[in-house]
Figure 1: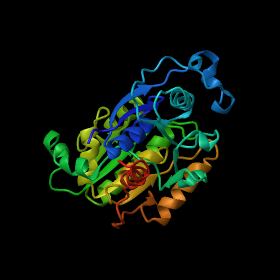
Figure 2: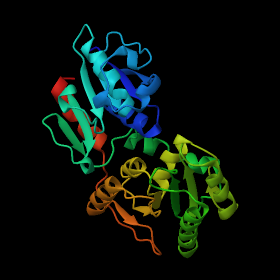
Figure 3: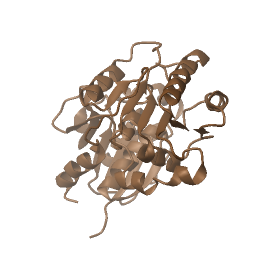
Figure 4: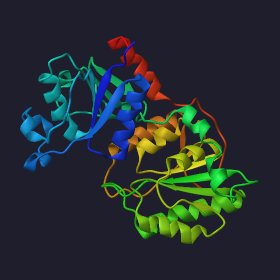
Length: 315
């Protein structure tokens, strides 16, 4: 059977790419990824006030496409335009709340904490993503191959996000997280791996290198294999509170996840709802002064959602 052809539309941010590519891979379609570029002042206009026109965005090559998977505000108008003007029927899926009429899309995939309801809405626990259990297992030995610092002790991984409109990566906030992690490392005789993300400031990485010294492994930058390996070999995982996407990804591991909280600059209601859900599911706890081991059912929402979609479009 010939695979369906898809186009993925995002604003180019890692969290968005992870979601659209994760779903496309789970659906087993051929796909190309396009980063949407909006023209002029339309960059700041909400989609519900924007005409569905090719004049709004830079040209997107879209020939013989069966499925569009979009994520992010800027991808909405291109998705609607391409569907409307295609010579063949296109099935369009939007990830996240589009904040336009839901019937513009065949399906909308949103996390439960968005409280969005509709006949074409699929709700997920956390964010869908591009990681798979097989990838995690296949990269298990990677960190051992690049560092001898991890032998003979249990491992704790600190996965760091980056500043957002809600969370400030000030020296004080980062120092507090590092201090808590360092105490737990010493108290429990652990090896530490520090995993930065695409959003992690360079100064935060340098701070980690100086703070944790030569006894532990601090990665210089983004390394997907190291990330996957850490999810496989860590006994405990610590993730900064600014990224529900990374917490959702780590939940595929089934490992205890501790959230390193940062005082918010303003109220983050969506994260509060996400955090409550994942706490109720026994996936996360707040980072404190002690470590406990617990287990939960691995969360693989990408696979679950892809099965629902496959049944709807018969692939």
